[in-house]
Length: 447
Image 1 (tube, rainbow, N blue to C red):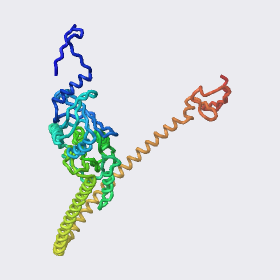
Image 2 (cartoon, one colour):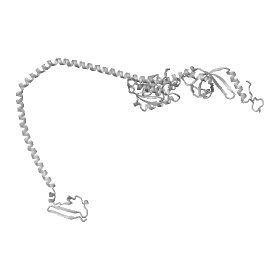
Image 3 (tube, helix red, strand yellow):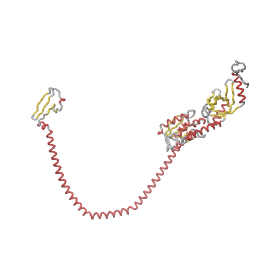
Image 4 (cartoon, one colour):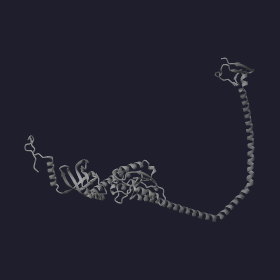
């Protein structure tokens, strides 16, 4: 490419001028010379979108500083429809991830520069192994972080309830797996009662993480009403499982105070949510069978206890039966011995009875004489005390009588036959009766 010299103040003399099209054509030539074929590029996909009418996929490739996270490079990319129809399902089948923004990929591209549209990369192939390696590194980093924080095995260490009857279910209300789960519990062969409460959540898509965490938060407010938490998901694409490899969701589940059982419906490797849950089952139906099995185990244990109690009771009854038989065999001899001892005792009592009775009668006779004298003295004293009390009462009654009061020079004023105690109760015109020792007088209140 020839060198272009521009000297200040030359007023166009000796300088080379290019149109924008000419400049872009030269850049295109340089790019074609530098990248005549294809190359493999490591980058992160961003702004992935598909044109509904053409089927072409348009996206951006970016690279960030691993320390600061700042954007350091960006390139526009495209995958033509014919390539995209084969590349997308192949990538998702191999990685188990949706072909979406945020994934780190290794892509085979042709580098192009168009005069009108500028610099771009056209994707021709993709290596899923690179993305799987990055996903595995991310999973291992989350697992390592959970273990370092000491929460990875917390939920597994919770004691599992003996009778897991009250179940909080986190799933989509329209999921087929939810109906299978309920039917399996309701139609269990032993007729165990199960009580379920649905806490709806999204089980696929970008909002799965926050939706399931929100459901766990709602259950936390009613901990005393439930024995276990079940997170189930029926069917669906394997690529939707990346939402269950979330650090926040795994941390919430690992630290939840009730045992968590997962049945996300896949046969492949466990998700991180499966790893931190108390129990991992493959499908919603398998979760139901597990809960029924726990009830069966409790029933078997109860039957064993009943058998032990029955055997223990039978042993006690047999022991008591043998004891009673032995006692029955010895009873006649014991009874005869006891009768002989009692006969000897009665004979001795019979010999002592006349003397003892005479002595007892003498003591009682002496005691009765003493009691008679004491009773006479007490009666005399009580009669004298009663007579004195009657005299004092009679004197008190006489002194309290109206006649006695009148004799002492007092008078009584009455209105309508009732004694007047206060002047404030009288009004002009009232007729009063005043009683003296020797008679009564009538008077009218004037003032």
